[in-house]
Length: 414
Image (tube, rainbow, N blue to C red; front, top):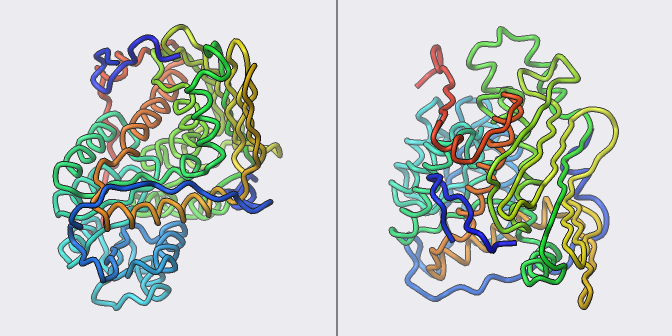
């Protein structure tokens, strides 16, 4: 479908589902291995482990840091979180001494002043651009959770940090699990090779059950001040980016990958079936238009009982179908492929942690995960904007508006 130029970041033209429910099932197939160019390694001797600091010590942060430790090629030597209890929980689990546990809004800065080779950023998405930029400026390799940002300026900051990391010979990896899975790679390869013919339309969905209910129940007991919002960040619109950016990006990242482009415009709607769940919406419906008038219909919901994360692409001579933790296949006139994915959430993260290690060791700083992550993140923001405003919004209009979201930190500790 990529016969017309797609919009750039600047607007110019250029050539009760849980993740763990989705990761159950059959074992994942062997994952692909990234081939890296040998160069001098920056920041870690070749015969030593890579020293990593963890920024963001919630449940996923502790889980990711434990995977780093289990890999065998890393030492987790420092942690940072706004809350002392979170930093201590991670520190106790990971064996990090009290002197290397940093708290407050500037805790990440004190962590970056330590003798580290790399950081894993698992904080609320609102803080990702600032923390990633600070890490690159400090000469650290960056492993960044999705989504990369909650607004357009944040996405631009990440794009610039990725470019700067490459210039400074630093690795910068964005942790999308589906891109690391062999079956998804095989689907994308065949779609891009034209196996299903020119793409005309596609659909994507992120349908799941009640999510973050425990977080919301706890939040409703509090004063709802800035500190309470930080603890309940996933149900806070500004801190998370709303569900279309924080959660639904999994489906839209696959869609923009398979369509190999960014949308030109979108129209959407959405709302709240449940009046709790912080201030986030719990359902979206968006119609995206891509170059060549290719249409992507997208829907999401986080209530009820039906669960699926999917993307299906229709060409003139075939179809490709993907599911997060399930069957994936592509069928064209002269070629076909089918497989079944298992523990994408776990296996994808393990693959990315290994790829990050290899990139640091072998000096491969091309950082190819940054650009597609910026693209899919901006795609969620375009859909979110169109849904909030309930009107058609173009990519160029979104980029020109350059809307920045602000989280008021009054009353929080530095």
